[in-house]
Amino acid sequence: AGAWATRRESRAPCIERGIERAGHAMALDQEQRDIARDALLSTMTSELGLSLSKEDRESAAARMEDAHLITNSYTRATGRDLAQVLKNIEECDIYFHCFACQGVVPSHRRCCARCKAIMYCSKECQQRDWKRGSRGQKPHKHWCPLLQKHMAKLQETQSLTAYFPWLRLTESGIFPRDQVLSALGLLGEDKGYWSTPSSRASHAAQHRNQQRYGVMLNRPSYPSDDQGWRLPAGEIPRLHAFSEQSCPALLGAQVLTSWPQYYQWRGLPPSSIAALLLEFPLTLYFAITQVPRLMRESRITVHLVGAEKELEFLPLFAELALLLPHTHISIVLFGEELARCRHDAPKGSLALASTLFEYATPSCFDASAEHRVTITWEPEHATWQDALGSGAIEPPDLLFAPNAGVAAYPAWKNAIFVAALARVTIATSEYCEWSVEMEVDTYKMVLQQAQQSGYDVATASPNRFLNPFRNPGQRPFPWNLAPNLSNGFCTILDFAEDPDP
Image 1 (tube, rainbow, N blue to C red):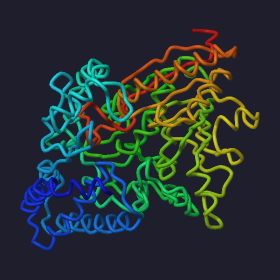
Image 2 (cartoon, rainbow, N blue to C red):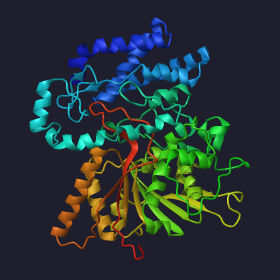
Image 3 (cartoon, helix red, strand yellow):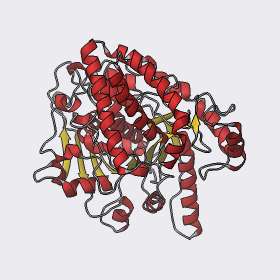
Image 4 (cartoon, rainbow, N blue to C red):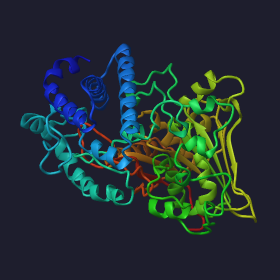
């Protein structure tokens, strides 16, 4: 908060210019521009990762709601289609800050000339970071060659802009997801599978005593396909009441490897934004397909750790029953968010059931057999490693963690150790390759320390992939222009022996 106050004056000209551009583009009057200015200030606060008091956060959330109402009213009043709204969004941009000192960077082009990824506010900050490092990280001269390789993938990670008409990027290559959802009336609470709790906060700033996700599980039953997706009828990947046109073909041994393939198989037009949620179940699908041993199994048990936003759309994991025919998928959830959700759940709600979700494919999909997905949870232990280490659960076929942050959370070290002892395959996704580099270093450190201590742990080399079912749009990141996408990069560590490779 102090950093915000001391640098607010330097931000003011940039804020005003951004407001004027956005205001004129959206034909807002002065009062609406004033509201939008407050919303932009709170947005910048979030993107720059600055700490705010509880009162400031509540005020910012209220102002953002006003901004969402403006966008929705504008769309209704003008009758313009989404393409026009997105064109206006392209004229806006995020603001960057210096990696070394966190000061404001006036232009996103002020970056390292070699890697073209990391932002700096001055030559002095850049030279200091090159030699000594910042934020407790190694010097930039260590990261720069790696970031050059990461930046080389930027064109590939943005390639889906040619397929999805709604995937418009800002001047800095950012996909403004919340603005797109707001324009469609899908941002906020009570928006079906798109619902976002008003108390949502970053991992670093979350309140441990305040529920952030799992509102869907407070209901007595799940919504219908139409109520959950809230998309035009032809843009919904239905799980029930298939018509002759919407029932997907039985895949058999075929493996899908891209969003266009999936959309064609599901009969979805590229105008559907379903990929923005389906990234989670399809990332799990991709992880399973990369372990040949699992593809030969008729039953697969997956332990999903750190479940948070997935709690809002658990029925979407039923896609696995369609994608992996003749396989029963059992998913067990672990995470503090689910425990808080169940603690506060009203009587008769979904959260209190022993089985959180179960799906069986209809006969029109495959008359010869039922394909099932079952989702349960582990109630007795706070963490996966505690549950497995105590013998309360059996080792799974796969330990899965979307957007895991392996290097960021100390608890992962013990989880890796336990997985290596039990020969459990780990599949994770990360937002960026920077995180993957640190994740691989964490794996090596944990296994090396275990072996030096005399433990009989399995060894495995991490396999790294650009996830074909990543979120298609680049996330805003205040000091790094390298590819950064939800479920963007997958790492698989196969500790389990394959008797029949």
